[in-house]
Image (cartoon, rainbow, N blue to C red; front, side, top):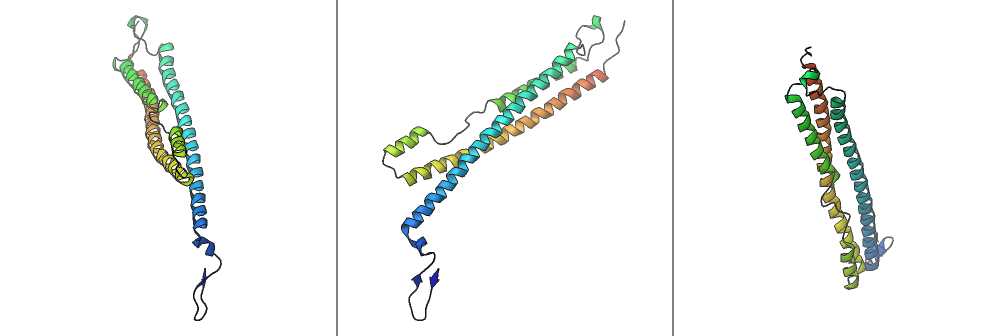
Length: 189
């Protein structure tokens, strides 16, 4: 803060150290450290979110496969008319189509392409041995991590939407099965 006395020049008092170049550099370094720590935390959170989404997607595919397996295992999907009533021809194909769609969506969630974890360590090594200032390297690393956070965020959103679609696919699978069973002709003996 500046104090002004009558007929005098401004003098420095509390806060004058902010005008000092060294203090500004230290404040910038602390800002980069804060941004760096935040970016590291965000990358860890994104990785955990992706892992959770992948686990849930694998579970969803297992349930969808079990629904179809259960339906055929207990004879609900009978293809031989001599063994009793069969489902309409559209039902098994519809179930297969829905299960295939769920499988494709789950594969998209399970195998993310281009997932980022931050800047390449070999690039940091090159900068260190290339004589770059440590503050510039911190800045580079922080910028790259924040860029990676943005790219990963888009990939997580796409995968979360794919998981939602797969969930609706499971619901569709159950609805198709129920409709097929409800409209199944009675067995003739």
